[in-house]
Image (cartoon, rainbow, N blue to C red; front, side):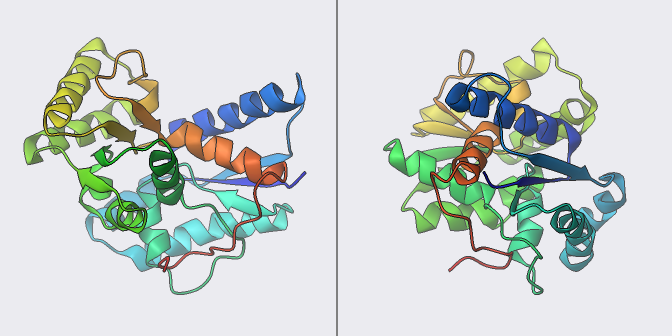
Length: 241
């Protein structure tokens, strides 16, 4: 089995992804059986002003340091359970030391297989306004919708002030459900939960639309690769053609 590296950026989403890798492996292999997994994380705090300044070069230097740790640990490939981080990955000039799975590609491929056509995108404001998901959905022939500007601010505020702090409230859940309902009315046939903390708040049972859980989809894709059901990735950052 291949050794999975988790290049973590935001803690709660990375923890959920790690646990889902273990659970999915057990479902396939039996109890207490899973590939070797190494998780490495540097504090996200120092990158916060870099995101506001769109300083993707320095963010890549921060993320690459973690990738180098994973390479030194013997990992065969990496995943990053942080959708926003992929904006920096896509802009990388220097190749990463390990190949990785691209979370937006994983979500788009799953949506395409499910026969979806128009996807509602929820994530940080960086993700909702950034280029990674539009590019991935376009590659797979999918349409995309994002919430209104006011709703984007609410979603972003909840992510950073609540979900990333381990706070889950019924009020925020209801607000998210109302936003998803609006996107359903706009013709969306699925919602991409493209901040890896959102699945902690929004489950398939409460969502007005079928969910594309980026955290668990990435975990399952990593297990596929680790068990040999899919080939090792070749992407090492930079734009995907």
